[in-house]
Amino acid sequence: MTREDERLRKALERIAYPRDTPWDAERFFVLLRPLTTSGVPIPKRIIRFENCVGLRTRDIVERSVVLAIALQVMICDPVRFPRAKDSRRLHSRRREYNVARVIDHALWLSSSEDAQFDLYVAAALESLQRVPAKYLSAQDSKRIGQIIAQCTEDSQNAELFGRPEIVVRPWS
Image (cartoon, rainbow, N blue to C red; front, side, top):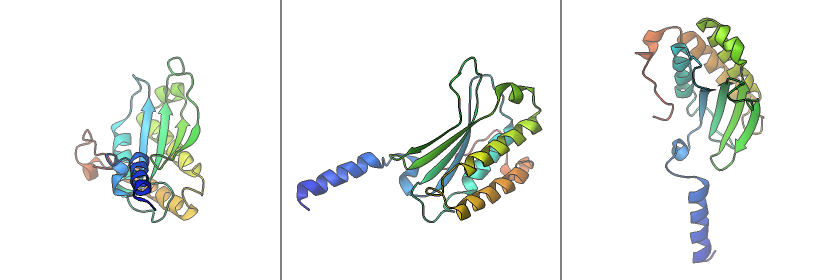
């Protein structure tokens, strides 16, 4: 390989894997976040739950094509965002696999906080099942499902997470 080829290869690596992202450390994690239109209430228990999942799923996958699995639960007002739909997409540049699952907006608004939490967890588990085995093995998917189940129980106890209004991101 010539010196120019080596320089070009390094430049392409910098473009393909930016170093200022949370994927910088080459550590696997699961990102679980609600995507909402403004005015949609998100219970604090969901914030505790998603932080628990993010922190406990770091580095549990030893081999994977992707570094992150993003499970996005969408709760969008159909008048303001009519294009919301379930989707799956590989972001090869960021080495991330995104799964979006839509929860009915009217159902969300008419539900209690406990029912909203149950809807959110069910959507997260459905999203996890939609990740192809090519990107996440059945064994790893099962382990992440167990972590989600454990975090479901732990999120009821706010003392485990300190003050519930403090949000800790999985990569911090």
